Image (cartoon, rainbow, N blue to C red; front, side, top):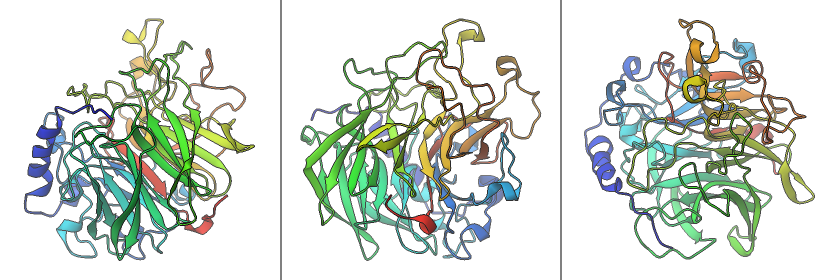
Length: 493
């Protein structure tokens, strides 16, 4: 396959060496770098507890200044206790200060190199858990936040965070010159991992051998990789991955806001697995294409943003896909302005009917940012019908849904007739809980022209968790992926 080679890769690799890999490690200061303050009971006492969520995010910038490099001491992985939030004070439509943990000092290993910060891990996006009790956590190197620095494992790294001690180790290193990886999932049936690689358009199958990842095979579903360095081209680039009933599902990134595909859309495909867990290429099939995004005036925009996460319910045959905005520019040599295409990604649910995946009747709106119009006056609006997904989604054991998002609470009185400023949770960016039945009218399809969700569709049905507990500024496009530890209900529906 031919390749889009990023002009930014060299500069960012140099930056990664300076910021993440070749400086002496120093302890992160909890009061300065972690305003949410580590809560030891979330992890240190017994490891990751069932019902806890693992979330990835951007580390932030030095001095909170986007003109500065990524902050090497900013956390990039958090464990969040999302068990029974309403019994612990959560209120619909408001920020819930859930207990969090980032393995900051003092940690179980008493080692600054095991803090889950950018200096040790670089920037990471994909996250999954294995079937150990408690589970180990796995995260993947990324470039999707636009500004990035790699950890010691480089752009192809999969990191393992020990489930009892939090110790960081490089689990696997995939061939990669700088585009980094897509996402990762764990196959409980065959006890193996699948990782998508932005570099070559392949999915890698990895087995755990004594705590180290062993690459057993790879799968290139379309045109063979030609070995050229850089991002795989659109149409060959794979991102979201998930396993269901011994089939591996994966997303194909064919288009985004800045690069529309005239005769193709972003898609979900699947391939069967053999008795040994290997890829059975003869079973490759296309499952469905993502519907196009609609503007607030009901007109189709002719595109969607790429699907970064695919997840399945542990209880029944339900699938969530999560899209992610602000993904262009990374591989074209042009870094887009901050937030230039946020609020244009969705979480959509599918159900299995007669061996086909079809849209469910449940709607999952993300965030209370309802969209925007030029000057808040013109009749033609940008997309944004509560389409603020950040690219991560996970079911919990009750069948409820946790998603990552931008502008979960976003109060601007002039623009949205919101309450006056001065509230404690003006800007909330992070994690959203929504009941498994959805958070909007189930009898109206939000993908059809003319549909408008109720103004309070999200606020009256969802709770929000800000990932850095800073509410006076937004963290646009800085939120990553999520997975909920569901061991108590783990099964293959």
